[in-house]
Image 1 (cartoon, helix red, strand yellow):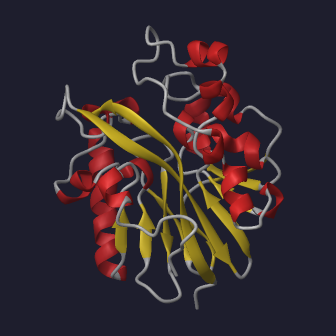
Image 2: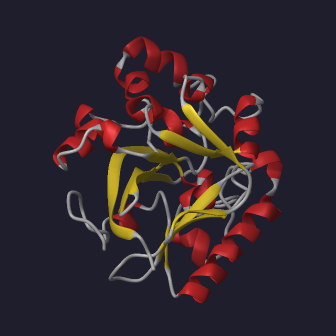
Length: 260
């Protein structure tokens, strides 16, 4: 029996970028706006946070913004993030504090998914061994090394596992070396799968298009992961939630409403 009680999608920022970053070899020159999301999962065993968004300080502080998002070295541009978008402020609207988060599950360590670790640094942080190694290699500019260099309570894992009954880590490499999605069995509605950046857009799923950025150009691995997610959804009669699709995000319950 699932131990999940409810699920909140949290909008932590938005990001405008060339669509080809989400859809490999298509959409060049088309600028899209994408949500940067985190997801709070309340269970009978505690609270799980899937991803943590960006580091607000790197966006709000002009010197840091220039350092990290200099267009000469970082072509993606900075996201738009307001102070009220920070995770502690989302949690406060639910009567919670960062210390009330028990586990942070990082789908992957890119700047827009792991930058906010400092906001919830007391939680146990789950990450894949391959992901951490890739992030520390310096071979991908979308990793900001100091985002994950703090004295955190790391739990470094390898492969798939259950976080609690009804929440399962699903291995979906391709976009990054150790990318993970998350299957969640809700108590009332259909199960859902948080695709993470294995599928930014519905287009990635429906047309089986790899993300624009693939670790070591492993498009084949990324496509295998998309097909795996589609098979999982069919098997579990689950919904697949793409991660950076603003039209899809608008169909979800808007915070502080929740899915159950």
